[in-house]
Image 1 (tube, rainbow, N blue to C red):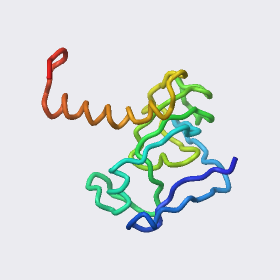
Image 2: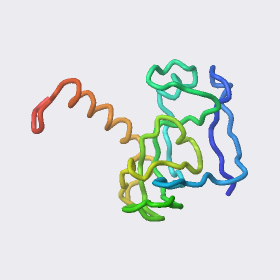
Image 3: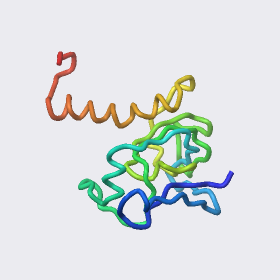
Amino acid sequence: MTPKRVELRSFGGPGVIRVVEDQTLPEPGAGQVRIRVEASSLVFTDMLIRRNLYPVLKLTLPLTLGYDLVGHVDALGQGVTGIAVGDRVADLTQIGSNATHVVRPASGLVRVPPDLDATRAEPLILSYLTAYQALVREAEVPAGGKV
């Protein structure tokens, strides 16, 4: 399989998006894993990033789009424990997940049940975090509280 990713070399409209084929797979460094992506997002934030309007990130080009992902670990970097090749995981990346293979820190990964469809699990990553921030951080709803 030829590794591919969705890349921006300039900011702008949809016409700046390109699918790029890489010659080699990315290799994980210490504390990192490589993930073979099953599903990744295309969300409103990606449009803001594509237009360089997302205030949270200081972006440099080129960059790969994709806010989150679900996939299988297929390579481990030095010192990784608690994660094994073949584990199914999810991660909130902010950028970089629209690719066939992604290198990510092992410490930020969340396990995904093997029987949960990737296209159903993937939207839960950002949606869950958004709801959590709204309810816990902003509204300060206590544990067991009602909304």
